[in-house]
Length: 236
Image (cartoon, rainbow, N blue to C red):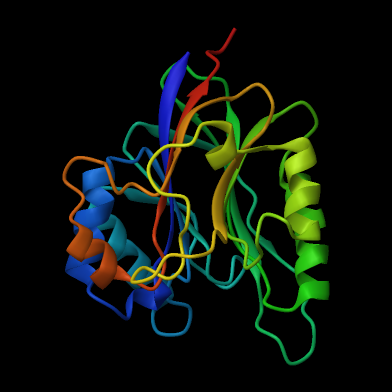
């Protein structure tokens, strides 16, 4: 079975210390990065490409108008089999939201989907978006959903998603629990979920990851990252 390192990170449109952000990402050694709040309005693809280059990754999906902020980056060993980015129905007066999704394979693993999402601040719209997330997987497919959910684990959308997917941190807690805000972490609104059939080996804020500087975590952006180590079954 293939171990895969998935990092989920809200980068606040790269408005903070980009060098610190890059150092955190590189120290976590991710195979896949689910980015939220990738720059949307000023040369978004060029800025996504710069982030990919700085972190030693490539763009897998997202980073454009369809995904509307979420972005997927991955190492050179990631094979993209299908892109499924999706622009979500929009409520008047609220931000456009979308999903960045790709079907990927790493090494000898089975294909699995990976989705980066950043859900609405509006409770009713957010609940509808939670309901759409499982649709990013096709029937019988393995999948990972990661992002900034703008909801606490006791919220209705989170609880609904957790009925069909493993919530990484309580499944295999490691590192820190709370992701917001970096200077006073007191809430868990960012997470990595995995479908049944994927084994969660560890998941949490990488305070204890070798090479991750606490000062960089404070300077990089207004969220703390979530690092999950998952075991994906090998292809039959």
